[in-house]
Image (cartoon, rainbow, N blue to C red; front, side):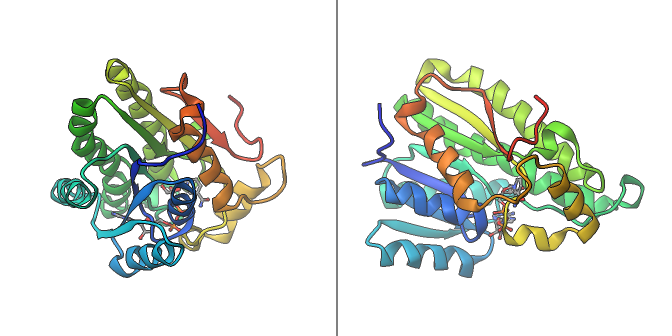
Length: 250
Ligand SMILES: NC(=O)c1ccc[n+]([C@@H]2O[C@H](COP(=O)([O-])OP(=O)(O)OC[C@H]3O[C@@H](n4cnc5c(N)ncnc54)[C@H](O)[C@@H]3O)[C@@H](O)[C@H]2O)c1
């Protein structure tokens, strides 16, 4: 039992910003060696430097998780640096632009599905053979409350996040025999730069639905992710934990 992560190696995707950066900092604080992955090489390097300046072991990896080749390379680079992978945080994601379904283009749909859903599939597929072989692993997928309730002006986004919850529940059952636990978190509105992608109308709607009446901070999500990859959540798998100020109805 415990929250300590000494001698564990974690991959955090989308670690260059927001929830991913806060999660990288949090896991490192509790002893993990972190691979900070981002499509934005400079942002990944910035998080790497931040952790190094705190005396933590970290490797920055530039990778686009929406491509199978990059996710395979990400795993290889992590293994070359740290020889094992204990934790995967599938956090990288995009919101897409705010628009009703009939105004969403083929490109809008393909981009959001590619990053938010196919990216999670690729990363799990790349990491799980290694975790299965070692008989050890923890994965947290960052879904969204939009996947449970459905947000207007965000049909592609809501669709991917609902699918990530389904993926989490299904794959978790495939690996219980190998001591691998896989869970999801569903944040409501969190103060990060992803909010720059959505309109004021869309943002106002989402905030108005939060009973606690405020947006969340990335560190509040990172704390729940940390619990889910720690030994303290040893009997928890296939679940979706909300970090939503009370928004969800189930
Ligand atoms: N902020 C919110 O309100 C909120 C709410 C619910 C869920 N989420 C989810 O949390 C996750 C993190 O979002 P955030 O709010 O921290 O946003 P953010 O924009 O601050 O960070 C997302 C990071 O992902 C990276 N990224 C984007 N596409 C990528 C790709 N193809 N490959 C690798 N990296 C990529 C970006 O460069 C960025 O650094 C996302 O999955 C998002 O959907 C956010």
